[in-house]
Each structure stands twice: as C-alpha cells, then as structure tokens.
Length: 234
Length: 212
Image 1 (tube, rainbow over the protein chains, first blue to last red):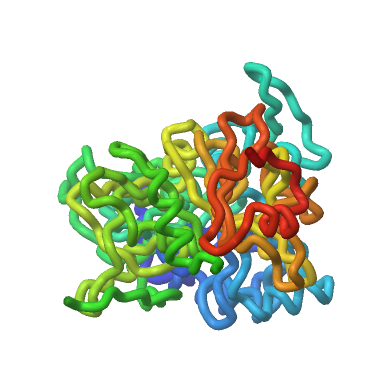
Image 2 (cartoon, chains in turn cyan, blue):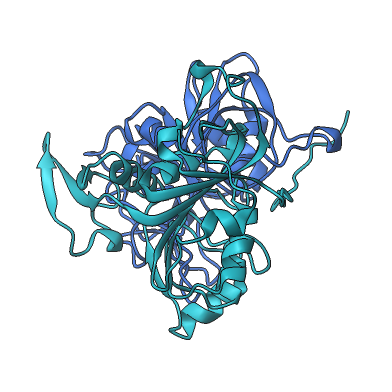
C-alpha cells in the first residue's frame, strides 16, 4: 500500500510541477475549491499553466490568486465572470481563454478519466463554440465532436479521506471534483478531515482511492460565499 | 401597463405541472420559485449538482457548501440529492429535466436563442446555458420586450452569438406572451399585458408571429 498521506501541500506537490503544465481544479464558483493547494501552487512559482476549471475564481480568491501572479497562461472554463484581473489580462492578450459549455466540460473530464478520447453531444451545435468541430448526425439530429481531457495534475477538495485516498465530498461542494479527480495523471486531494482506516462506509465513497495519489489535510477552509442570499425570517 | 418582473415570473410559473423537474436560470427566472402553486409537486434542479432546492436560508442556516447555480446560498429539502457536475448534466442533456426557464438577450422567430455574449462587454462564457437548451425538453424565456435602446429582442434573426438553434418554446416578456405548439410551428401571440393593444406589441416586435 503506497503511502498517500502527505504532511502538507508543498510536500504533496513536490516533483509534480513544471512550467507549461496542464492543471485541472475542482469547484463551482468558490464552492468546493482546493484552497490550500492553490496557495501552494502560488508559492511554488510554477508558470505557464493551462488551467482547466469551471470558473476562474475572483480577484483575491480561488484560481484568481494564480491569475494575479501571472502563473496561468491559458484557461479552459465555462464561465469566468466576477474577476477583473482575468478580464484585464484577457483583453490585453496576456491570457488565452477557451470557453467550453459547462456540461461538455464536465463530460470532457469524465471521458478523459475514463479513457474515452472523444464523444458527440448536441450541446453547442450551431453556435460559435462548435466552429471547426466535426458534426455528425445521430437519429437525425446534428451532434458536435468533443474531446476527452487528461491533465498533468488534478487538484480537488473533499470533505473526508481515509488513508487509502477514498474521498467523500460534502453537499454541492462535490460539483466538478469527482471528474477532476479522474482526469489527472496525478491527483492530489485536500480534505477537511482525514479519518481512520475502515471508517468510511464503502457504499458511500464518491471517489475511490485509485484516482487519488496524494492526500493532505486542508489548512485553508475559508469557503468564501459569493452570494449570501437570505430569506426573511417569519 | 407592462408586467413587472414578479408578474412575468408568476406567468411563467403557470406552466409548471405536477411532478415536473425544473431548472431555473439566473435573474428573473429564479423568481419563478416564489410562485409555484403549493398544490403541485415541482422539483428544482441546479446544474452545479443539486436536485431538490429548498428556500434561501436564514442567517443561522447558511452553509457555504450548499449553493445554487447562481452561487446563492440555498437550503436542502427532505427530497434533496447531490450529484457531480457530470451527473447533473446527464440529467440535463439526457432529457430528464422537463422544463427550463431562462433569460435572453435575443430570441429569433425560429426559436434561436442568444443569451451568453453581451454586446460591448467581455464575453464571460456560456456556463450551462448551451447544455440546458440542447437537452431540456421545453424552454421558456423570460425577457424584457425591448432592450435598453428600445430595440425589439424578439427578432427575425438573432444578431448576437447563439446559445442554441431552434430551442425556444415560449417567451414571456413584460408586454406579451408568445407560445408555439412544437419546434416546427411558428410562435403565436397568446397574451398581452393589460392596457396594451396587440398592435402596440406588433410595433415593438421584429419577429414574424401568428396574431389571431
């Protein structure tokens, strides 16, 4: 049994980083993002990253931190609002952006992790995002060829891990994390709780340890809320 | 008098049926949840991986790990389940969601939709909109009848980048309601806001539609 538990984020990323690498990160908005590992990537100074993530964080949180330090050269995302530094770099031509419909992005990661190099989807047919892509009819409907994604490194946030790297996510913080975990050649997970051997119900594991090579206890669990929306109390 | 946002949302809510699984877009569509008939059972889905959305939380109930696709804090119900983004879009793309209500910048008379790229602003990306219109059985659009410059938003052809082609089934604006039988049919003007004439709606619409 390979030892998967690492002492901290820097140790867990040791030997995995190089300039020009591809990176996939879990999270939706600021929910379920690997905050601790993003900090460690900033500190590492690795540059020229192609980052694949549904969103790009905000100016001072999430992947926005890696944008601010100019460590990201290209983003593949479905939505990149709420980030002024992103906008500035993009408009100045300093940052390359590839938009991908959200469901297609999730499926591209899932496919990549499952050894499927490409798949057809009706999503985006007839739009700018399908330009230049192969189209094929199934049941009389045009579908667009999309490719699976495999990356050098995946980073995910989970709620609990056991020593085998089995992961359980919490509520809507699951989002992209399970697919991100599968599409990395190496996957590092940061978790809120590391629990003992046998303490996870095998029926309740979301990501089996085969997809997770390294685990750390998260030291940053700020979980910033983008839209704190309340109902009036009766 | 034009309908207010709440009235548009209330009108769209009439289209919800017992047993429906529904995805509501960001903005005015989110308001639709306030007007669901309590006598019917409707399950709201959010594409970030939550099926069975409850009301917004009280301060004490706020949980940063429970958000909707608008990144708003939300609560669970007894029926709630969480899934990955891939499974969530499996529900959407796989045709398991009965209805989605979305905002728009333009809709064409053929049902093309443009709602992801704002003119003159940096493109922020489509999010899940392209997946929703490609996969959900029925799409209702809530939008103002004309844009800030007074230009009709229900047009002959969309001038903005498309989200999907031939995907819209019904349009509720602040002035009128248009609906079509199926995606081979033309839209028909079925309701007009109080105090407005059908001719006034016609004058503020570029699209060709049936006006009986």
